[in-house]
Each structure stands twice: as structure tokens, then as C-alpha cells.
Length: 384
Image (cartoon, rainbow, N blue to C red; front, top):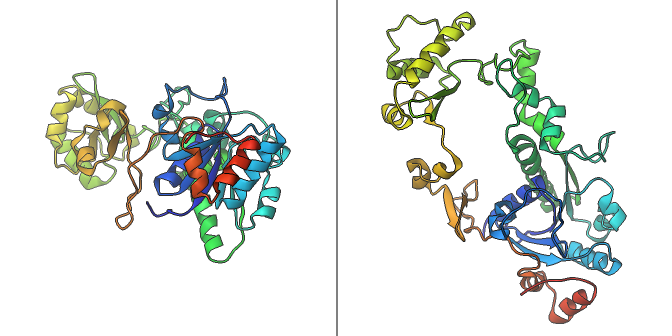
């Protein structure tokens, strides 16, 4: 069920952006079979208390293969022949050394979309070096703009490299390549690199730099917390409110709601007056609790919102009204997005244990019982 219903995706076990990009495809209805290692690696990414906690692993079925064995590689190739998409997130050259690289795969399945997720890309002097989200966005230039004035760059969780510049870029590339295949084109390789994806997310800032409207000093610009009217402020109860009234009419409404409309304050875009504006906002927000400020700004266009914790977000009235979060096997998580009104995505299923639902997946992919038995003899493992 979903807009990608009927699309078969073969995913090789990885961490971070590859699973996130695959989750997006799976949420939209793609039939994802993940090739897992027979046993969990001991030193690979964050640890989860069972598969139900692994939200980016949802909506898959699993088979296990020891790809160091030639017979297991042969099994993987049979699965590749039946797939529309392959997604892997190993270092460059790993799949080639296993005998599962794109040249071999596309020779067997010319219409295959072969998605490759890395930090540095498939080529370049850093291509084979280890790294994580923070390293990739550091090289992209984006990290330099994130952090307080006079302070050090601050990791923006792992959203810019792993997920925004990585998994989403991969999913978009895969979908574009699939569309090309459906229009009569040939399959191809999608080389998604987090350094380039993160840089793309920051495209507007290169324009600001070129026009002289961006200062390299952190915390001195419009969108980096430098502008006092685009920042967060502590409230009486130690919580925070986020404000962002960039436009003049919304800024005027902010001042009115804060009780500052008649105050003798500097103009909104007078940088020399920003310190005074900031101090006025600090003192104003400290006068009420976060919930009291929410009541003040209820129905307002002042571009103000409470800063909610992860555990709070699902209970906000707006998110509840839209059903933006769902509980699956006791775990609260975001619903699939975006929404498709004609072909809505199904409720997510929890991530599978190793080999879980593998037999059913093989049958759905066209293997009969004899074929499944033969694959088992070649090293494939699964559970019903």
C-alpha cells in the first residue's frame, strides 16, 4: 500500500543515512528486503534495545547472508536480479570486492537503480576514509555557520549530514532514477555523498556570501541566532520559546504581544541596536512561563512557538489533530511523510529481527519452495 507499491528494494545492512533513506521508500509502500549479517556487529553505530526501537529500520523484511561466503554472494545476486533498487552504504570498493558491485549488478539487471550512500562520495582523496555526520558537514562548510557568537561550532544532531544531506538525497536520487527507467531509460548508479548533500542544503548561504550579506562570524546573521528576533528565549519556568518574525508586520505583532509596542526600541534591522533588542526580549520572556506565553500567542501571526522536547511533541494539539505521531509496538514515532491523499501510506511496521519474515518476502519476490530451499543451501537464513 502506498505510491511505491510494487517497487522492490534490496537493502544491505548499514547504519545512519542509508537506512533512513530506505525507510522513506518503505514508508511510501516499497517492498524492502534487507540483507542482514547473520549476527549483529559489535561496533557499528548506536545500540538499540531490540528492533522495535530502531525506527529507521521499520517497514522491512529481513534475510541473513554471510557475504564472505561465495554461495551467499550468489544468493545476493539472485535477489539483485529481482530487485528494482539496490541500496548499500559501505565504503567505496567494498561491494566490488564482494562481487556485488554495480557493474556486475547492472549486467544482470540492466534496469536496476543502484543507490550508494557514503560520506565523502565514491571518488576523491577522502573517499576511503572513515567519518561520521559531523566530519562530512564540517568539510561542506555548513558546520561553520552553526553555533553561538564567539563560541565553537555546535553539532546540529546528525540531521544535516546523515539524514537531510544523506538519506533524503539518496531517496530523491533513487526516485528520479526510477522515473527515468519507467520512461524507457536504463538503470544506473546513484552516488549520494553527505558532503555534497549538506552543501546543497546550505545553497542559500553561498548566495548570501556572494552578495556580501553573510558574515563568517557565527551568531552575527539573520538565520544563525544573530538577529534577536530569530532566536530562542528562556521563560520563567526554565523552558524556551522560539521566535522568527522576519517580516515587518509579524515583527510588529511580536512587539505588541510582548508588551513592547510602545517601548523606545531600535528598529528591527538596525544591527547596532540588536544588543538592546535582545536584552528587551530576554527580560520580557522571563516574565511568564512557557505555557503562559503559548496562551498569549495563541492564534497569533507573530511566528512564535514553544520549544518542545521529543517526548512532548506528540502531545501538542496541532500534532495530535494531524496525527503526526503514532505508537507502534509501544514506541512513539513520526508517521510517514509526506502525505498522499489518493494513496495514503500504511501504518508503519516495527523493524524486523534478523531474518524475520524472510520466507514470506522470498515468496513475494517470486521464489517457489524449491527455490527457497536452494537459496538456503547457498547460505541464506530467514525466519517465517
